Image (cartoon, rainbow, N blue to C red; front, side):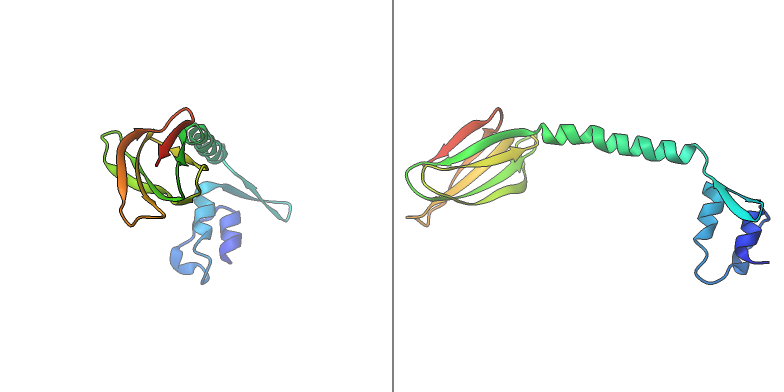
Length: 148
């Protein structure tokens, strides 16, 4: 008998008896009930599978607001065009990842989104090769951080 028919009527099937490329069907047998009724194969999925998928999706959605409610602020260039590099800091003040890098034109500002609310800003003005930095800056409530 074919692997599909044996599976449909609920007879045990050895892995060696499966056709090449049909080993994935074993998952169907372990995750769903397959019945042969009136010439058709009907599959009943147990309630555990859809409930688990729903709860996993709900968990991802519940985490989404936490990420969108992250702290935000702006970095503003004062007297001239400035190249800015912003890094995220963890709660202990250690640098984690770069979250912004680019040129900000004089008088303009760039939005910064931080998960921890603490950032490290390094900047270099267009007229200079020297880089300056400011550590452990609070990035929250739309605060504007000015760099010269």
